Image (cartoon, rainbow, N blue to C red; front, side):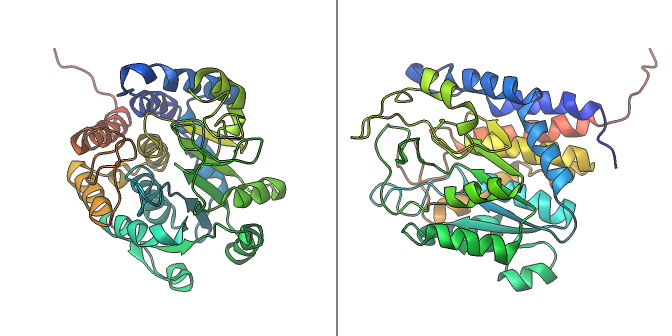
Amino acid sequence: MSINGYVEHIALQLDRLAMLELRPRRDQGVVAKLHEAAQQRQGKPLTLAAAELLYEAVGKGDTVLLTTGAGHHDFLPHGETDGPPGVVALATVLALGMHAVPVLVTEAEFADNLTQTALAGGLGVRDYESAQRTPFTCAVVSFPSDGTAEQVAADYLHRFRPAALISSEKIAPNAAGTAHFASGLAATSERARVEHLFDLATERGIPTVGIGDNGNEIGFGAIEDAVREHKRWGQVCQCPCRAGLASRVSTDALVVGSTSNWAAYGVAACLAAILGQAQLIRDRQEEHRVLEWCAMAGAADGSTGRAGPSVDGTPPEVSASVQHLMRSVVEICSSEPYERPF
């Protein structure tokens, strides 16, 4: 099945929606600059680069590892609302549209949250063996934060034999080995070191997708210089390493958004457009349910630390509207042309 030419037009609109900057005055314009750097590297809309990679790499019955989870033991003990809804949107298209087996990877502390978010999105949750046999399901597994992470990464690649890896809103270390929050402060010790998964996948030639919004996440190693130039704390951070928050971890495709969720929604919508299955994109009601269940499972807004279904300071109605617009773009721009009778 070839990818239709109009999908690039769809992807361009999805990119624009994903990078709609609802940011306080100090941070305005940065997302656009990071997006521009990534597009110069990839030569096409970012959502299309990621969707094409997944479409070409993943077949029926293949496993895809999707990782997310950003938190803080005091402020975000069960994770944040940016990340889980996005990977669930992607997992839904992979499971329902491509008949793949999504395995969602996160910290043990966030596993229940991610499970509830998947259920709210309409995916069943099973153990991995059952998920391989059961349509419309996924598995949720935890990943360590200690010195066993490198070995666990090797074990996971051996056990799951993934066709691709996806990361959304997953912070990663800089060149000095320290991972940072967007504040430029060092991440807390409970962070799952999933960068080992991506390092090993790159060594083995397994396709990878990174999705983020701040430059400190997995994937932004692809445009590390742009992060250091444009992002506050990109060049010099607030922690003792003083090496900046720019991630060293690169991926084959990088997608930049105003929130990581919206960037992930854009990739999911573009993949749905390629498959000709716009119905796989969540509608407003479904989006509200996903955000509410994610919050009810303990997630908080990553910008404010407040409990509730807002995402990075934007109310849930905004995320629902972004999803609605993305679905409308795919539906309308995929429709057959018609001649006006007047």
